[in-house]
Structure formats: structure tokens, C-alpha cells
Length: 223
Image 1 (spheres, helix red, strand yellow):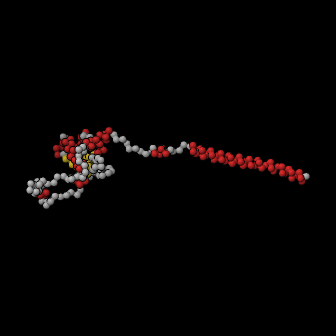
Image 2 (tube, helix red, strand yellow):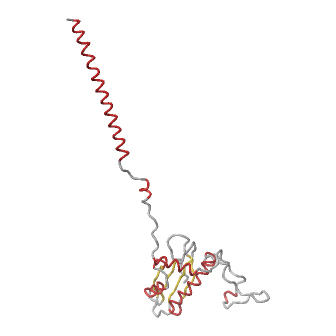
Image 3 (tube, one colour):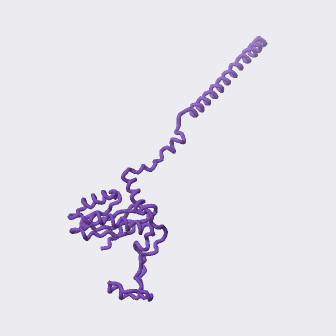
């Protein structure tokens, strides 16, 4: 009986081990298959392509026809103008003998020598801006001289008709019988602007200096 029991035990135990081995092998294979499925699924899952991230950047909006026409106007006013530092406006006239001729201004005659400006258009504008400003001043002044009632609305209309867009017109306001304004004429790194006072035949348009970069900030008025 003992030998039979021992023999039966020997027969039964070997028959269970292959089953356990097969079960472990099956579980391992299943785990590997599951892992592979997750990895392949992750790789196949749609993500955010690199070019989609780059496509988010906002391109500069194209210039409108009005803005393009205004840019062309600025280029046209500066056509043929010199470039480089401004040599300065003409100084006092000299007599043939080298003496400085007296001016019509007694205050100027009292000065012992010419005064060199330290700020303002003479110092901060270059030759191109100075030259272009002469053209802008003349055409704006001529356009405003005919206004009998230079209201801000009428002044804006004249400036628009001359090609100056609303984005370039600043601080347009009436003071008594005069309407005052600034026009931002910065182009190609320049700092040009003009200050105007529309008052019929007494209209005055003069050069001014705008900030180098950023939004236009009207400079201090001259008077």
C-alpha cells in the first residue's frame, strides 16, 4: 500500500507542473501582448503634430489698401531727398567781407554768436525727414487755407483727401477759432511728424519729432 501511494504521488505531481508552467507562460505572454498593445496604441494615438504648434503663430496682418496708399505717399514725399545726418538749416547770411549781416530780429542781433540747438527737429531729424517734411508742410497748409470754418471734422476730411489716414492723425481738437492736430509721418526708421494749426489764411504747419519706436505720442505743442 505504501509503495502504491508513493507511486501515485509521484505520478500526480509531475502531471500538475506542466499545467502551472503553461499557466505562467500564458500569463506572461498575455502581459507582454497587453503591454505591446498599450505601446502601439499610444504610438498610434493622434497627438499634436509639431507643425500644428508652429501653425499657431499669428502672422502680421496684410496692409489695407488705405495703409498701402499712405506708405506710398510717404515714399513719394521723400523721393529724391538726401540721406544721412542733417547738416542743419541755413545760418545767418554773411556779407562779402565775412561779416554776419544783421537780422530783422533785434533779439537775434543782440546775440554774440549763433545758437546751436540741443533738441528739436534741427537735432533729431535726419536729412531725409527734413526734406520730406517740407513737402508735407506745403501740401497740408495749402489744403487747409481754403477752410473758412476749420472744424475738427473739416480738417480731418481735408487730411484724408490728401492721403493721410486716420491712424496717422492725432490730438485733433479745436481751440477757439483754430483746430490743432499732429500727423505721424514716421517711415523707414525716421522720426518725422508735423504739427498743424488750421486757421484759414493763418494756417501754420511745422515739423516736429515723434518717438523713435512704439505708439505715437504727441510732443509738447510749441504754443
